[in-house]
Image (cartoon, rainbow, N blue to C red; front, side, top):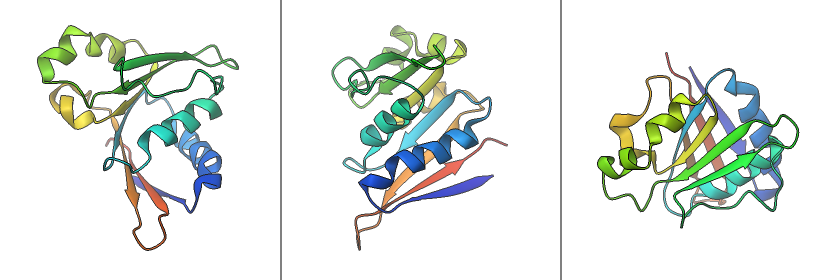
Amino acid sequence: MTHQIAIPDIASLPEAARQLIALMGDYTVFAFHGEMGAGKTTFIRTLAEQLGVNPEEANSPSFSIINEYRSETTAELIYHFDLYRLEDVEEALEIGVEDYFDSGALCLLEWPERIEPLLPDDTVVVKLSVNPDDNSRILTVTMPD
């Protein structure tokens, strides 16, 4: 099943994040697709904040590949991956991505196409698209069958 969430402007990000949270159910791996500059990191940061992560801790893992956050409201672990700099699937295996996926913790992945063969069958695909006419965004969420 596919859902669309409109993000008309940056002020709408918290509400869009809450709408995605309402769809999450028991799924734990979310693959965020979108062009460079589409706002994946900004959306994931807002999503983490809506899940109870301290805003000062929710930043991009661009230099570390994986950031670990903990929700202050639920104590749940959240992993934020930025896989852009990975050279290949072997490098992902070396950092233990499969262990993270199997942990039951929420895993939010930017640039998941870099490790496509490793993604679990129940990965939720989230595509962030930019409308060039007004710079708004559309989040298309495809739930696994």
